[in-house]
Image 1 (cartoon, rainbow, N blue to C red):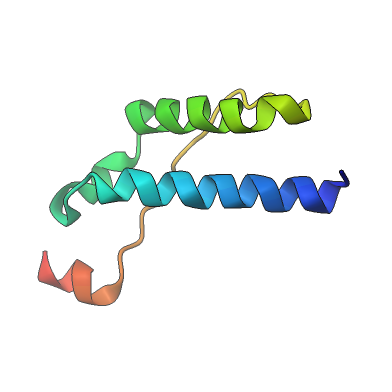
Image 2 (cartoon, one colour):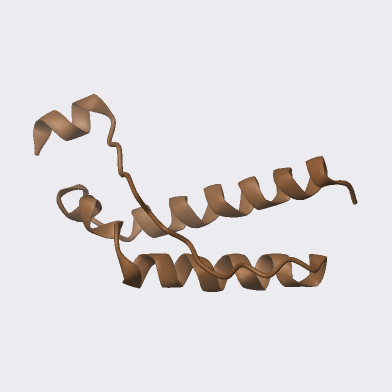
Length: 75
């Protein structure tokens, strides 16, 4: 497996995990995914997905949450 394929796999795993996380959170509380609790959950998930590829995910930082304009304006 080359670097490009690993990058695609990691990007897919991140996208899947973000979608799963936000489905369980109301739009009013979505800004709260920044921080340690959700980052730890994502770190654990990505570590389990990538460990069989020899990649160790040590940490994840969720720095920004951007909502679609129609959702953001309705809050």
